Each structure stands twice: as C-alpha cells, then as structure tokens.
Length: 120
View 1: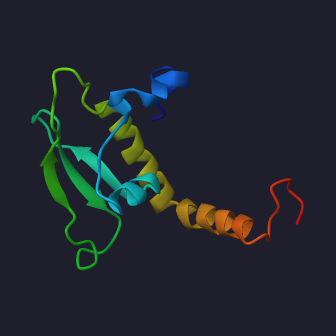
View 2: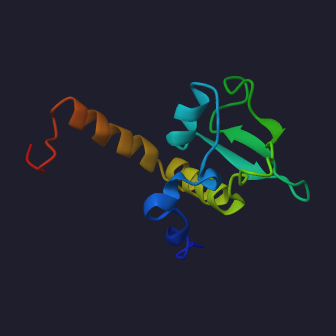
C-alpha cells in the first residue's frame, strides 16, 4: 500500500530533520542509499531493528544484525514510518529488478551513452 501522506514529513527544509537521519559506517550508508540494505522493526521493542541486505547469507556478513538505535532527549529518533517506507521501496526495487535497470541507466548517463536532454 502506498503512503500518500508522507511528503509533508520530508518536504522542503523538513528533509534535514533528525527523524530523517541515520549515522552509519562508510559503505553501509552507500548501500542504504542504494536500497540494498533496509531496517525492519522488531516489535514490541522500542527502536530495535533487524538490518538486512539483499545478498545470500554467505556474502552478507555481518548482516543481518539486530540493533537498538540510540535515543537522545534533544534529538528525534529515526522515523519508523520513513524506515518502513524505505524498506518497502527496497523490496519493490529488488524484487522487480528495477534497481538493476536504474543502475544501468545511471551508468549509461555517466558514460555519455544517454544524454540528460533525452537524445542519444
């Protein structure tokens, strides 16, 4: 199901709010940005997630892992809603193979095969 009312949470300057931020080690942040890893909430734990990746278990080390995200009184924790939306997007992109198709298009644009103006 689509979450049509999520845009107001990240629209404009709100995109830089703490609930839309995560600190990760180098490599993990890139994989998260490319929808290769995702966070699945573990109920009923408060801000505890199972971090998973779309790779066979032998290649996915150290994932999957379970982590509780730190809370601070002055900083909002990551939004469960936004993490769930990213998880859904990751599944859609992975299972439809759209992620590979998008990567090919972006690579072709970088190589000059496809021009940004649409001409080839």
